[in-house]
Length: 400
Image (tube, rainbow, N blue to C red; front, side, top):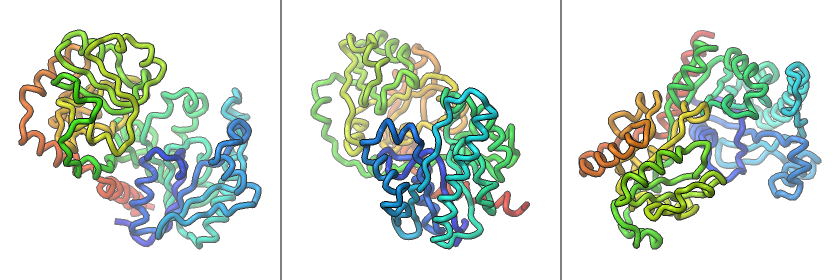
């Protein structure tokens, strides 16, 4: 446990974006025993011009122009900072040297805004926690001079073109210069350890209350006419992350199974042949509060992710959501899934594997297995994950 410290959290996820994020949950857990300054990513010039009418951009421009205060209290012990500096949009620049020079300018602007907020809050001897931002926060260790700098890896960002362009050089450098690196998957911890021996797997927290407290047995209205057994997926339907071939194979091989997909579709899914299959049901996006009702109506839950640089090391939080409701889960096998979820999920790699494992899951499901899944998911709390982050920080602090 770390108590009574001042922690500055920086990264990719602004506080005022509605979707949940690991970083926001971690910051809230930090704030139980420490003071926390949560810094929104600074507004860049191109975003300010292109999205000038969006309320979030207008809010940031008012702060930058001095018309509104950028430091806002969120709750006891935690403040949110809207940086009062506009940064330049530079990722399009081809020259690594020129990019790094201008990136230093951007970092200085952000550091100045953070320093002013720290002075107002009287933050001292800070812990700097960087959520996967390898560009805008690259120089903050040198500029803010924290007692400890932490780099948090939660996705393999170099698989994404935006980050790969300059990040292939810069992220390893940032990992190496950080005092400690923590990751939410064993795959990412191993990746960080290539550049920094002080790299640790800290697990993943999940907000499972709406899943564990669900007690309404009634099926959703749009599922009542769907034939059982129901094999379901909840989440964004993205061709970049989900394997269409696996879903197609399941639907073709077992026309007596109903495949139910709950979530918004991208163009790849909208154009897929799944829409022409009688046993595949697209139910669209649903409010988060209704998702437990849909999961409860599934006989088996799926996570047929594509194996790619984007997905191979990620922690799919939906697995915990499924397990928290006691549901049997068939998911794509990765080294991380095998290391963490083996024994609580059915793991396969091909469409044929999925058909065999779904059949097995349907045959052997029972209350004892459901209870074990619920208990396992319940161990994945933000309190436990942050406790591991504290341990990693303390390991390094004792040697500095």
